[in-house]
Image (cartoon, rainbow, N blue to C red; front, side):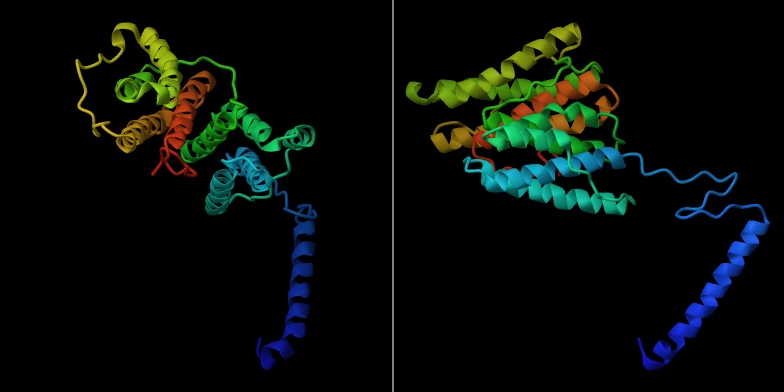
Length: 306
């Protein structure tokens, strides 16, 4: 502030104070009661907080807690999880700010309690956050994909840390277009893993067989639910990578799993407001993400989203 401005500051404050006092008297005379904080003017509704603010605050607390827990943990996956949760926290703060939200979350009593009683807090915390993914289902379509992807990383982390979450709900999304849109990618991934298993030496097939086993129940349930409306599988697939070596098998696994989680992410908005369908879709999304990371892909903050 320049010296002339400094000299003028006090008189200006006095003028502004007098003006405000006059305004208050005028409003009082008009029958409008002036209160501390936001004024309540008859006939004009007080602006409510943005629709998604409360839920996104909880998501923000979750990733903040998970990042802190991962940074203290000695688990092999902890450094990667700390990195992606910190990135999620930064991005979520940006999104909330651009939408006029106040990112001042209240620490979750539940997450604090889990951390207090679990000797290995990171797995318990990731499991708890993953189990709450259904709470995101009513977010607006503007924020649902991002928040769902964050929930999916909690689910994937819980699987990798040996404490997979089991949120209640149907495994088959009810809107038929959702499983119909995702099934071709799921069927292709299963075919690829059948080939990977066949091409892998017997004594090293465990990981490929585990991935295959994690995907088969979902395909069976979704195909059964769709019945004749289920997309027919082609007689054969042209594999994007020939699994002739260990490195090529890992590459093929990453390609088909990436395609699967992108298919899931592309349908999440169609499940908005339908908790069971949302949980069914994000369940497969989380499983695909966990398997993708197991096959050597670098964990990302928002799997399946650009």
